[in-house]
Length: 557
Image (cartoon, rainbow, N blue to C red; front, side, top):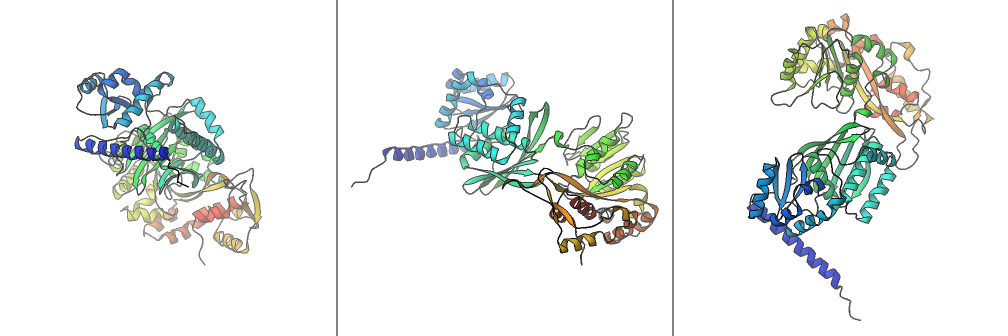
C-alpha cells in the first residue's frame, strides 16, 4: 500500500524554511545598514504606537510604529531607501518624537499592517504605566491568589492561542504576583522551555513552564515596558515600569542578564502597601522594643542594623524613621536605590559615580539634618564620615553586612574605624533575620525531639534574664500544608538581637576584642540573641525550628 504524502505538512515546512531565510537575510541587511533588526512575529505591538502613523503613511513609507514610551517611538521599516520614509521621519521629528528605527522582513511588515484593523477596538494606554485598569487588576489579583488558579488561566490562554496572548499572559502573571504577595518574579529560559518562579515569603517556588515562543513574547513585552533595548541580548540591562494598584503606583524594577538559552529576567515588586512600617508588627520582643524606642530618641548617636542581603534591614530602618518623624525635625536619607517613599522625609539616591555614599553624606551634612539614614556602610570613608556625623550632633541610622550584633564592631575596625570612638558614637548595634511564619489557619504543634531539646537548652545556656527563659521545650510549631502547592507558611517575621553601648562595653572595645569575646561581654545586658528569639517563636507556634535553624548560628559542642 503506497504511503500517503502529506502535501499540507510539506508545504508548511517549506514555508517555514523560506520564512527563516527571509529573517536571516533581513538580519544581515540590518547589520550592513547599521540598524537594529527585530521580528514583529515575536514582539508585542503597542496599539498606541501604531496610532501615531496613519495606515496610508505606513503603506507609502513601508514603516510601522510598534512601540512608544513617552516621546520615544520605535519604528519598524522595510528599507531605509524610501523617499516617503524620509518625509515620515521628518514629520515625526517635527512632532517631537525621538525615533528609533528597526529593520524588518516583509512578513513582519504584513503582520503589523494587519493590526490597523484592530485600532478601532483597542484602548489607549498610559505611557510608561502597565496597560490594565486598577479595578481589573484588583479583580484579577483576587481571582489569581493561588498557584493552581494562575496555572489554569495561563494554560487556557496558551491553548486558545489568542491574538492578545502576550498581554493576557503578562496581566495574569503580574496580577497573580500581587494576589500572592510575591516579592520577585523570575523568568528563566532553559533548554526548550522557560521556567516562571515567584519568590513567596522569601522562598522561590515553581509556577509554570512556558514554551520558547511564549517566552520570547514575554521577554519583548517586559523589555518594552521597562524601557530596555530589544536588540541587546548579550549584556545586562536594568529598567523599571509602574503598575497602578488600589490607587497607588507600584514600581517594578526589571533586571535582565544573558544566559545559555536566553535572557534571565527578574522583576522586583516594590509595593509599599505590603511593607510593615511600624515597629509593633515586626516581631521585635517587647523588652527589646521598649529599649530601642528609648535609644532612637537620642539627639545624637548611631544605630546600626546588620544581616545578609534580604534580611529586612532597610525596612527596619524605615520603621524607625516612621516612628521618630515629626514636623520639627529634618530627616535625610542616602539610599541605593530608594525602595519606598516616605512622607515628609528627604530621600536621595546614590549613583556610585558623582553622588556616592561618601560624597552624598558630606553633602547631606551641609543640609542641616537632625537624622540621617545611610543605606549601607561599604567602605572606610563612609564609616569614618558616619561616625563623625554621630559625634557632632546627628543621629545616624545605617546598615552593615555582618553575621550578628557583636560582629558589628570588628567589622567597623576592618573598614578602618577607630575603636576608641565607638563608645561616644555608637548607640545600638542590631542584627536580624527573616523567617517564615506558620499559616494560623492550618498550623499545628508537635513534640520536639530529644536532639532538638538539647539544642534549645544549649541556646538558652547563657541567658542572664531568667524571666525570658521558657518553662519547657516540649512542643514546637509545625507546618501543615493543605496541598502540594501549599507550604504551610504565610508571611514572615523577624528574629532580632541588639547590643547597647554602655561604659563597660565602651572600655572593652578600645582593645579591639574578637566577636566571640564581645558576645560574652554583652550577655550581661539580658537581651535575647536571634537564636533565642527564634526558639521562643517556635515554642509559641509562630514558626518552626526548621525555619529558625536555617537562618541562625547554632551553638557548637
